[in-house]
Image (tube, rainbow, N blue to C red; front, side, top):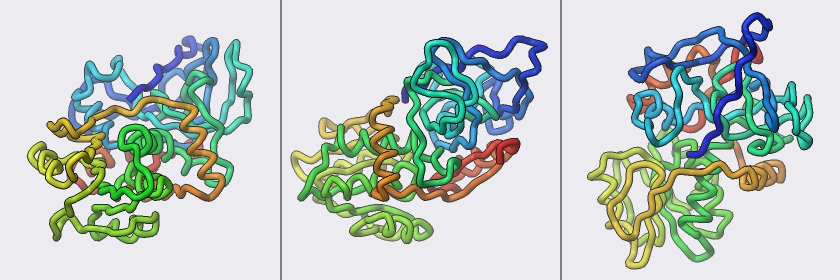
Length: 317
């Protein structure tokens, strides 16, 4: 996943302070600290955003554990949070497209805080038809689903796709986008997620805890972090000439593509347009204050989270 780095901090003594969820070292969830730190300042081409919400992404567990070291640029101490929804409060030099008061969303770095800085060019106008906090569910999950469905799976009418992990945050968007592409959607989900997955348009829902996964698929989208041996079994579910697209556990097969989502503001604007047109639903499973983030990390590691979880800084809730 491509993210952007945080801006410079306000100079000491400037009075600009904020709360942030940060890690100073890799480790278990106890390394997450809630600290008062200098508020960042926007540089040329950047804006300062007051955060309405960020959202939790399971891949942040890997970042916290140090498993993404060398994959993503991380400098410790590091402020968590990749999704941002909020309001521009200050624009740096050379910013012309955004102004204070504009509501925005984006895939940035350091959004688990009261404020974050981001290049104006990576942000999109926030959806107007959903609450500002809910919009934080869109960037990472929406972009990943968009690129999986349209770029890598190249889904189209008449195809059948198995969405493995349809009850997760990415799955919420992938099911809807696959239906929009004209595909027949078979979704895997636990009983607690079945109703939501059907509501989002799945043609068939398979309870992976009780039934084998069906074969003969044109495409398998793997959105779940599963053991390597289970990932390899996905190869038996696609027809000859079919494709496996995975954003989680890699699959060793010439039919398989493993990818990391990139930051694409144009695609983010497409997602916003679909949301405002009523063609794409954003569902929030849970909402919590910033100080619940360590508990959410623990629950995610033990498989006790589902769907999109948004994090609202207490000072802006």
